[in-house]
Amino acid sequence: MRRLLALTAAAFISLPLTPAAAQDGTPGAPGAGDPYFPGQGNGGYDTGHYDLALDYEPTSGRLTGVTRISARATQALSSFNLDLVSTLSVRSVTVNGRAAAFAQSGSELVVTPARSLPSGRDFSVVVRYDGRPVHVVDPDGSVDGWIKTSDGVYNANEPQGAMTWYPGNHHMTDKATYRFTVTVPSTRVAVANGDLLAKVSKGGRTTYVWDSREPMASYLATVSIGKFELADSQLGGYRVITAVDPKLAGDATGFPERHAPVLDYFSSIFGPYPYSSTGGIVDHAPEVGYALETQTRPIYPRVPSESLLAHELAHQWFGNSVTPTLWRDIWLNEGFATYSQWLWLDKIGTRTLQDSFDAAYAPAAEDEFWQTPPADPGGPENLFHDPVYDRGAMTLHVLRREVGDAAFFAILRAWASDYKYGNADTAALIALSERVSGKQLDALFEAWLFKPGKPTL
Ligand code: ARG
Ligand code: ZN
Image (tube, rainbow, N blue to C red):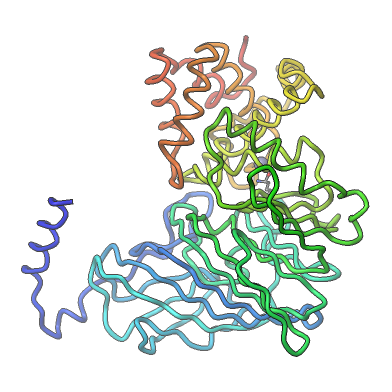
């Protein structure tokens, strides 16, 4: 702290405070440097908070949005970028309350403030925009982003959908807190992350205010809209907020009550649940097909099985609180969530952990399955392929066998607490595992995470 102050003072004194200084600075980078999605995220600043005001009309598909961002410059900036698809039209941008110049191209919104921003300076950006959001199609062919359903929106944004509905610094290394103020026709419900603060109806429209107090990567944000039955209750010590499509209400009986037992079990092995509320969004979206661990409140395209519920809740620790630094390290999310799912099925007596491992290990050595090493899946088209999930989970099981239960669970707890609300990569996990266990584990991780081919047991 003291050293930081001294440095700041020195930097301050050496800066010439003349109008010419206002022209100093260079453009922030248009990407965060992730090889799988080079345009994702931006350089030169760090966001702290997003305040999103959204007004949506499901019949016309029209969205009107105001995004307010609080950020800090990490270099002297003559201009900086936000990520937003050009199918949405930006109407105005201000920086620190003054009109700023802007240009949209591809999924980049380039903002040139009236005065450049000195390094270290806090600043605020307000973007007004509107249009009809459409989802994107990912390299693996799945739909991602603002996905329209018959009655609203299934909003899942991993890995790149956030740019389809609000401007931001859309790489997972820049986490921020969020406030969502969403207005929809009163026949619909708008569900987002975190705690429901208010619900106000007026003139046939209802505004929902949601607050996400813990930092969040933008791929985990959601504003899902539809005909939902909303329930908000205190269950087993958790605030559980669920939204269920009435078409699925019959199958979803008891859905809120299913959360506390899973969260209690995971808390007992990973450490405290990291968020102020939980729950889930159960939409009828057979055309989407996949669920997502949207922060605090996963979204499901159907009523989840016990295994899927456990998977998405485990992600709240692994993926959401501890987030990778590059998409290539996605096995840190999916391998951990899959292993947690195996643990839960074992715990409730559905399937033993060994049976889950054996089934995953079963493919023959020649099988395509073994050709993708989970820690280096080769490209964005393989992000969510089976090896990332199953071989990732097997890696953890093999690690557990090697270091023993005590060290293994100490590693999981340390991973969750050392990197809480932050980012970490595979190298950090290997270092932590070696530190906690006191063992040399290079060969194990090399065989299981980095080399193609079926490792021997
Ligand atoms: N993280 C999600 C899960 O396994 C999967 C997301 C898949 N996304 C996609 N665009 N294919 O829980
Ligand atoms: Zn997952």
